[in-house]
Length: 496
Image (cartoon, rainbow, N blue to C red; front, side, top):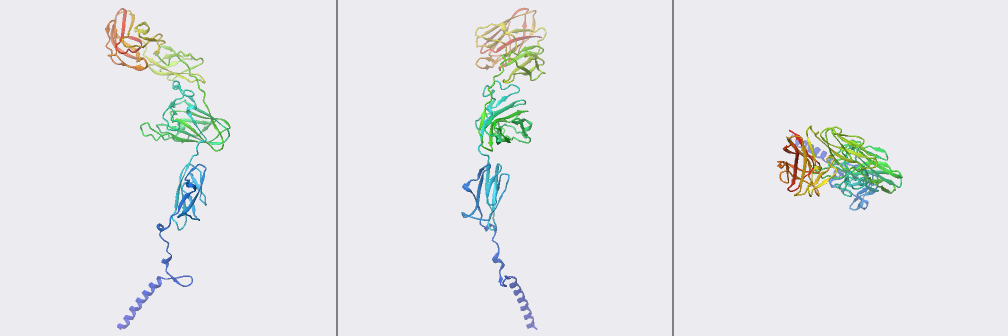
């Protein structure tokens, strides 16, 4: 009995062993047995990596260029490779590895083959050198409010701003509603071209169509959704950015790019023209325009009164920027409506406009005695005519140290009155501030006026001098410059 049990145990062990051995073998097509572990693929980390190279190491392509790629292992070419581009909007790649650039940017080209790890190479596509670069300083400028008339630089009194980081270090800036820029050039052939404008500003513009209308050869270029992002650091420093206007058809001859501004907009620096065919681009300079000529660019008028703009240019038009402050007729006669400041634009077609600042003051009250500076005299004092504040006669323009201005006037009766001086800074080589307490001594009938404050700036303003006693008959005002005296147009006495 024991012997039989031993035999059964050995048989079972043999069956288990035999099954295990049989399970580790595999017969081939010829009936032979083989071990499957002998054909197992190696780990991917152990596969050799393909190296991708560009012909002549050219990994930056100009738009439209091609380059041949090769896949290599230990400097030996590997054939049968499949090629793909991560961004076919930038560059495509053929089955043979020929890369064709189709758009601006960077893409990754990948080489794939069984038994190898993938190889990649970065290809960057850039614009070619422009056929021509034109400066907007050479454009024909128009400012709706005439604020550029005094710059005197470049065609049409260019409003040059020396802030650009582009080619020439300057740009055309500070646009507002109604302004325009017109840049003209000639092309020697009718070809397609991409227009790219270098712009700069310290603010972002998410949709340029809201601030400007762009036309090429009178056809509107859509700016819908075209954004300008300044990249400002918050301290007034910002880059100038290339903004594409898209592709246009150049004509053989004169071509015109025009910006019409609806509001404040990015500054303009350069127009870069990328022609799609052979052509020669030549700038057509803007005409140098003369400015409308007026005798005074700052005038004052009392509310309810009038003042005349004296213009030496015939055939001009006059426009008030705020008729709630002052109106103007077709002859340049300004009427003060309400206290405040506005501008009158004096314009003529084909000429640069000029703006005249109008300061409207409070009306003269009944019983006021107004004394013009033309009644005064004083050695070393410079008088100027006509008055920049709107009075009919002279003003004290330069009032040197030690000089004394004397003015006489008559009053019907004695009264205590509030005295005011309509004045500005001393006009020597520049407009110098005058401290009424330390720089000048003002007296009425030999009684010192205790005036305080500082007279400053080039524009005439009203400065209260305090209360004074006016006597019946002849009265005398003396103004002595202890350091420098102010520019004076007139004195005003208001009843208390």
